[in-house]
Amino acid sequence: MRLLHFADLHLGVENYGRTDPATGLSSRLGDFLRTFDQTIDYAIRERVDAVLFAGDAFKTRDPNPTVQRAFAERILRLSRAAIPTVLLVGNHDLPSVLTRATSIDIYDALAIEHVRVCRRIDDFTLDTPSGPLQIVALPWLTRSAILTREEYRAEGLEALNERLQDRIVKALEAIAAGLDPDVPAVLMGHLSLGGATFGSEQSIMLGQDLILNRGDLQPQAFDYIALGHIHKHQQVGPGAPPAVYSGSLERIDFGEEREPKGFITIEIGPGGRGERQVRWEFRPVAARPFITLRLAAGGDDPLEEVRRAIAGRGDLEGAVVRAFIRLAPEAADRLRLLEVRRLLTEAGAAFVGQITPEVEREVRVRLPLAEGEEMDPARMLARWLEVQGATPERRAALLRYAEGLLAEDGVERGA
Image 1 (tube, rainbow, N blue to C red):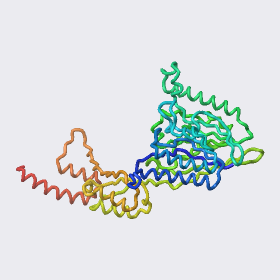
Image 2: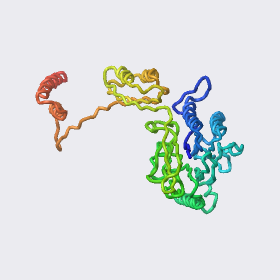
Image 3: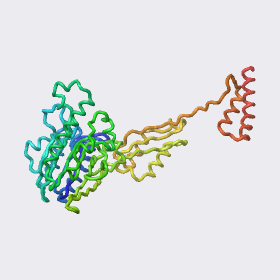
Image 4: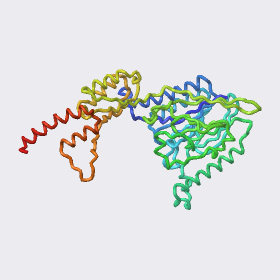
């Protein structure tokens, strides 16, 4: 049995993009759809047995109709290819009011063939070309359901998280006890799992997210745990079953600059001693590259130094680029940031973000003085040259010149 797992599509993200004059749409929508298409194309070409989407279809809970249509066109391709597809509801998909529909509930309402939406903890069996597959769905759950009970409303965040965690664990325990051990089983979850490396977006939510432990998920009952919510691809913890975040398909910001983007393929087959064997593989997609440049331009012509540094790069074509340029104080006024932006655009950058000059500040040396000690200008200069590490010969020469200047200055001032 061969499965495809992906998550965190976030259609509708428009940062680091520009409006396409031909369509009126953000160029970033094209980026996200291209990686989405690579995923769908693979699923259809390789005839996978099922596609498991672990949540966050859109950037916001109320995506615009154009973005919804783009998502629907691709899900319809899977449906027409008769590939069973499970859509898990993520935190970005949830409405502010629990009784409202999510942006993906429409697929259940229209009974789109081979497509199933999971908004609540649930378990069911998919009929796939390679046989039955047991699915346990754990979508993003909020504390709102608990807050409907009057006695819980005065409780703090920690107590509410404990109640929600207890509710999840008990539900999963009951479901796990009823699974058929002879049939492959996958847990799909949109959640924060303890031990995972959080990305830039999730770091903001630390302290607010409910973080579950691996043991809470009843791992012994499953062959694979397909996770969404954290954008960084990773396997959480060693051992079986593999608990894997596929990561997002496209980079959201520079916090994901060095993260590979893609989806997961899973093979579940017979193993030794009657046990099932699970193998998974991360398959990268051609996501838009993000590149941070750190340049030094401290000479007489800082723009020319920047020009040479950019010309020496071979990786800016098609990238979203930002630049930090270290400058000497005397060179700061000679660098024109608009010209730097032009150079990056001419080098092929798809979008130029912030360009930040970092002017080196002169470090003032404090001369050590004994208590009550005073210095005249000549002695101060001698001590400063010593602190600066000047050779004795150079110190002597400079002090001779200084004595002459100080003497002239004294005459002019009438000293």
